[in-house]
Image (cartoon, rainbow, N blue to C red; front, side, top):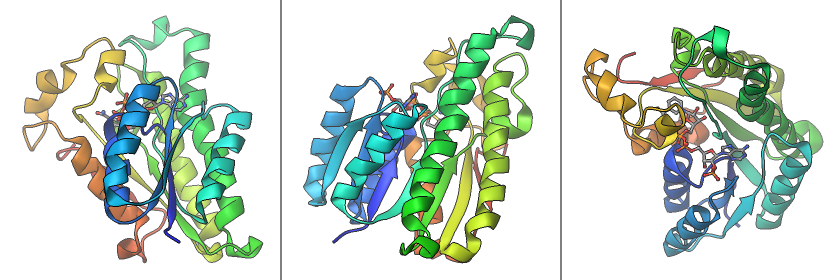
Length: 247
Ligand code: NAP
């Protein structure tokens, strides 16, 4: 039976590209989406070319009952080997003074609480203390965790900085239970996410400020996620891989 990977928020962008890479490498893939059913189903049929089992599950990963259902669906495919906490959102570019409490809470719920809920569900299954076979968790943070994203989305940056702390803390907690926990910190990647911030062409506006003078691709981030998830990084835990053109 092939190894199972759950990738949250994998109907589009970095998550979808990661799903493709894991399927190519022989994993059974659990695609997760919030609204984009058509994208998720199309991705599922693309993945069928690699002949590995695959399922697309609608679940809001900021809700405990949805996360529970998502992992129950994953259990049907086999033993969970990898969790990629990728689902994330941002909101319109704004100064902190203009960010509402409701917005701040929503960003934390989707970006951070989801990571907490899914990580708990994964550890329960993977931990050698519970009879599991171990596994690997990769969190998708952001270069914003270090820059703070002033005048754009401090709320988003704060949620990603919290993911960094969670990555480090959990990695040390479960290191002796066969589970490695790491994170990628992408920056300026060509995906639809920038439209949520109100500036679809943000990458092209800013790219000249990066040392590499270009934006990144979802594929470049997927490669880093896969490396951290796979046994190729077997001596790496509690670590961060910046995929941000030198930022
Ligand atoms: P994207 O193209 O906007 O895709 C976001 C994905 O998250 C979609 O599949 C979306 O599902 C899903 N999602 C949103 N809310 C969800 C929820 N409550 N429950 C389940 N799924 C949910 O974004 P992306 O650029 O690929 O971003 C992926 C990750 O990379 C995020 O964590 C983001 O913060 C991080 N990141 C991106 C960049 C960048 O430059 N693009 C830079 C740094 C970090 P639906 O399609 O159903 O809405």
